Length: 286
Image (tube, rainbow, N blue to C red; front, side, top):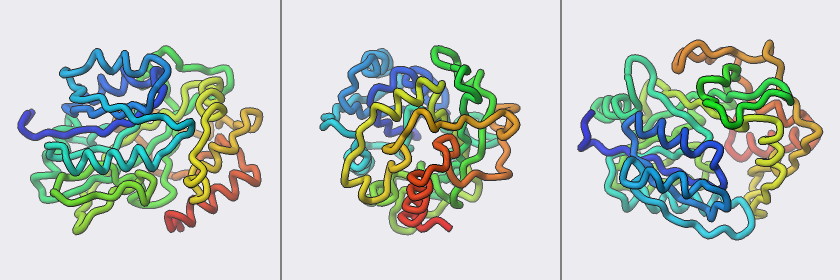
């Protein structure tokens, strides 16, 4: 590993104790440093992360919590850090994500170094969403990356997850796309997609806790963001059966056929239908 080639994951969190240890450990094994932005967590998230300070976690910054989930503020901090921090590449990352480089690369570090040397300045990720398949199934307190086997390929649009980019010295824009697609001048996206395994929730109870207790920023709701989550009804959650999903074989052998255009577990109420329309309109999805 070329230790002089520095890649930093920008990780914003609030009350992610269920994910944070596994996420940090994976990034470290992948050769990635972590800059943590904590939105005043009230659980053990920070205490867990502090154990990794100077062992992969390079800094923990506090972002005041104003009573609502404010994605724009989190992304603005990431934009500022990406402009000021001395690193070769950055990854916009969440705690419930596990990322890999495609074959033949052994680590994210190896893959991103290759992409950099080949003259590219950004990487798109294929997103695979892993779910429990019944209300009784729970992966809380488990090695969910190894034990959650069923997933769907989530792809409402091509090049939807441009989440890794080279530090070119330019200002970058994460806010306008809600963090889905980094933007800067003369971006040159790598030919092949990397891999994002997304663990949205680990049980039905976890989904109810995550979405049922969250208050969203009003200005972001007006932009069409978070509407499905804001209108979350635990009685309407529809976990797909195993025969509706794909089963994982290996970390990187994931199927990109039959893409899903929306998260069906929210159900297709009038609210979720309008949410999808607003979301697709905002990001110009077709």
